[in-house]
Image (tube, rainbow, N blue to C red; front, side, top):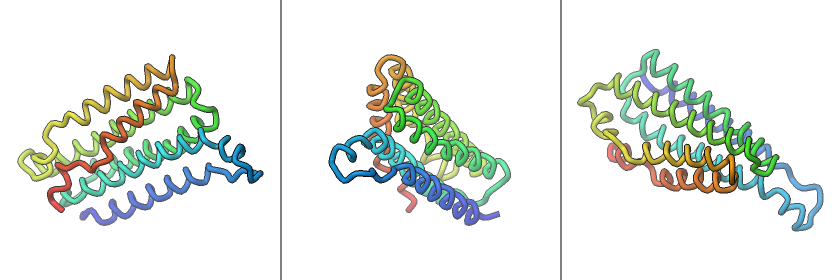
Length: 189
């Protein structure tokens, strides 16, 4: 089967994920700046998560341009990726609501690694489907960015036990690494 249905479904799920995240940002009851400032943990969490969801949507979009047909393994891998990504709003809300305490930043880091693994699995399935000599396989190759990301996630998770705000710094650094779409995948478009 072709990729159109999978792409449309994925885009819809990702749009819902972003909508759920923004709905967690409640309007303050008063109009003073102090009330707005009290929302800063939720806002910081929201910005970080919005970046991640946007980055995955962007790279997912580029990756699917290389895919010529979909099989069951790719569909299930994509569903697993979307499942992991759909947990981000929960982690975002929990972390922001509780001002980045140890357990919440730890949990958020675990979610980020889960999403990264699910995305890597989807990439692997596409590579397997398209073949070793395919444009996708040649474009992906080996990347330092993926390895650096996992290392930074792990450092962030460890940091969350001692300095939860430092964990956020590592999570933001990974997002900044990926803010420029994967150039290897952009070449086809």
